[in-house]
Length: 228
Image: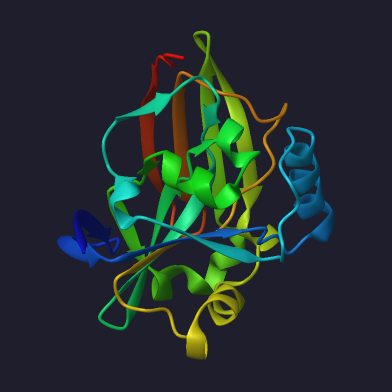
């Protein structure tokens, strides 16, 4: 069990909420558009990463990999971020946030499951109620920026209509089609513009153009040396 404190933004009010998280699930290959999904699979294949056993697929990682810090430490220079929406279950309710599935690409070529455990997973400290956004879910936008050698570039961008609907994603991954309390799930990502590559800093956001609000977070990537 691992506690994280968030701020729930309900438009007219904000409320602090500490959530106990005991399960971290990272859903992969969640694209509704099979062409876009296969493009992301293909770019990973070019890096020596095998195709998934199924689409979607639900990887598990330690809940303690979740962090709200503004920097993470990674061994070597082969890791990179991926912006994703995040679902968190609490007392029968589901909240929506935003995070980065930061992944060691070198390890990913050996084992995707192992790679998910190698790096911390930064998440923003703001959450929305799913019921407040589900009516315009497909219009929401995921976006990330990578700072590479001092230059900040648009790294990923796309609307959630490109991914499986929330109900479908939950139904495929959890018994009885119910999202468990204490669970956090990353919901999938988009292909990187210009290809997957490491960065010195990674900024990500989930924009709600209907209610005109955005969840944002960013973090520096500290590279630790590999000795032998």
